[in-house]
Length: 198
Ligand code: GRF
Image (cartoon, rainbow, N blue to C red; front, side, top):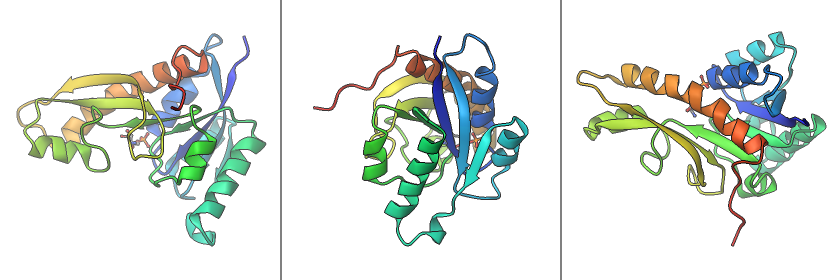
């Protein structure tokens, strides 16, 4: 079996990154994690990845004259690792169209809501403010519109009486950690594919 080479983009704690690294340790998993790139040098996930013997890089957008140049160097870094699939895992930068189009059909993201509900930030707070009774997470292909690409998998959780953003996000995170490895497995195995552009 040839395993797809995967690069993960993070900005912080990297718990989704960690579950992808763990999943990819199984001999029959169709992907291997070959590199982790962060836009923040202080992202705790970088140390976790390095401790696993995975290549890491940190690139601060503020050190580049433009977002395009920053993103070109991200692509060069990913390609230097031979990356075939990019996983966004808590990467807190909006990506430009050129970068997104370069990786079209090969880049996926996890978002903590039942898309198309609650695109963007503060999803748990917004779900609670709306009195939502169900919430969850989505893994989707990345397209230029923020949190808009085709869904690969979703998982739902109930919103319970007395929930706070913290309790709700913890319940969703359990599902994120189940969902993301399965979604990457499907993409790497070719079971989930982005629809061809019109
Ligand atoms: C997760 O909730 C993910 O859905 C969102 O950012 C958070 C990242 O958490 N995109 P972690 O860094 O994977 O722990």
